[in-house]
Structures are given as structure tokens and as C-alpha cells.
Length: 92
Image (cartoon, rainbow, N blue to C red; front, side, top):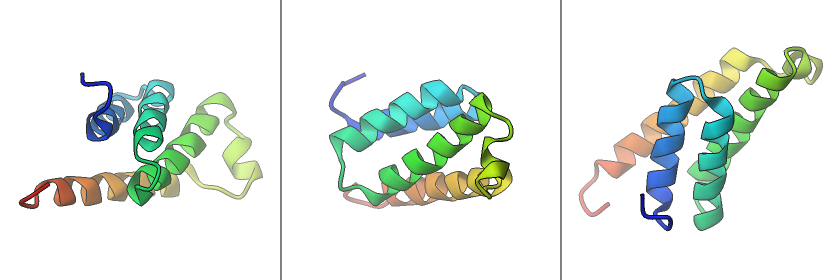
């Protein structure tokens, strides 16, 4: 893994998230966002993943804050689809 490839970190985070390794995925999303802080997809995915990870640590945490894990998971999945579509475009 090239330590400076933000897209590689993002994709690794996605795979880890799909495997249920949310805290490891969060670290990868953080690294991607650190390498490209202006990328709104990375920032949104990081925010969504952080909320999901918070839920792993505190099952009542999301509900107490008026958040829904299913909605966050859908948002994160949509971010991943957007990323996949943009990566498939010529010149990316």
C-alpha cells in the first residue's frame, strides 16, 4: 500500500467496513481524509463511519442523539457508490 494514496486508504476502509471491522475502517477513512482534506466524499464517509463506530461502542449512543444506524449505513453505502462511479470515469 502506497502510504500517500488517499483512494487506496478509502477503498481499504470500505472493505473493512463491509467485513464489520468498523474501528479499523474508521482509521482508514481518517487517513484518506487527512491526505485529501478537501474531498467532501471522504469527509462525509468519515463522519458517517464515526457515528457507526460510536454505535459499536455505545449501543444507546445513536438513539440518545436522535441518530439511526440504518440511516447512517445507507448514507455511507451511497457515498461508496458515488465514489465507485466517479472512479470508473475516464481520467480518474
